Amino acid sequence: RSYTRMAIDISGSCNGMCPYCSTGRLNRRQGSPVPGRHMTLHEFTSLLDDLTRRKILEPCSIIDLYNWHEPLMSPHFVAIAQYLSRSDFEYTVSTNASLARAFHEADDLRGLTALIFSMPGFSQDSYDRVHGLSFPSVLDNIKSMLSNFRMHGFKGEAKIAFHVYQFNIGEIKPAKAFAETLDLGFYPFFAIPAELDTCIDYNLGRLPASMLDAFSRDLMLFYIKDLLRQRPADYVCNQSRFLAVDEFGMLLLGCCADSHSRYAAETYVLGDIRKMSLDEIKLSKERAKSSETCRLCQESRSDYLGGICGKKLVDELGGIDI
Image 1 (spheres, helix red, strand yellow):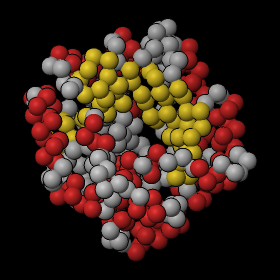
Image 2 (cartoon, one colour):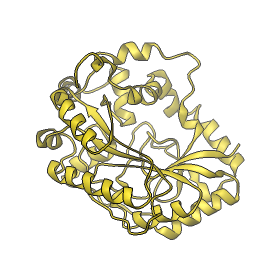
Image 3 (tube, one colour):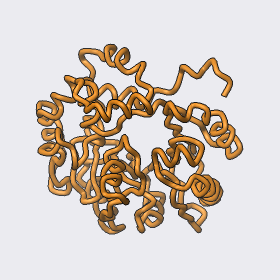
Image 4 (cartoon, one colour):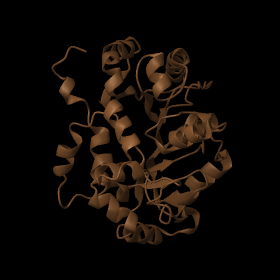
């Protein structure tokens, strides 16, 4: 069967400094955001036209315009969104809202089904600890984009994905109040290490003492071991069900593996998707399951951590007035 969902990095860079994300960690090591290439509008449209023509991707598939990087950093973001809205694709966008983009035609965003604002807290202190961005600017950008997007065809779900750390628990209530004033959905969930290597090392007890100390101060760790023990023996990683493509048009092992990974260095790229048939794509993804990368991921139950914990809402806050 053809695929019905694809995550694609139209931008090769992110200005976030998140310590639990591969891109953010690289930015921190360099001392500033690392520049990357951006997929051009022609490259993007040619890729989707080719994949649908060859029946690799369904014509009405969902396209996630993000993976490791910030999609609004792409100078082609507006044109790409307009193209998708003129086509039959549905698409989603997740952004740190450090930048604002504006549209001008009534139906520019009719295909946008989900707009996600990723927030690491609701104060400048929390932003200094994680994203390294200006908190007042983020709030202003969220307001302006929501207003502009809703006037130009966006009728999908808009929400705040609020990453809960130990240091921002007291900020959940004001963040939710802010969301309600803008008719935004509010989804708090426990922050987890998004980097494959870090997940594997933590779950296998290999994490360096300095990093484990940071984990113990920042992250909610009390539920992870118990949750991972619940992983069914026949659990199937959801990476096999969709495509992940980078800004060069290369098919990736999965959306949670990155080019700087020690464990995924040799299996990170599966091939040039523009030169692969549907059968070749299926075969390469099936073969990847027996790679050392996937073996370690399964053995450490990191596949379950990314697939389940990352989506886990903070049910423990259900009895607290937020």
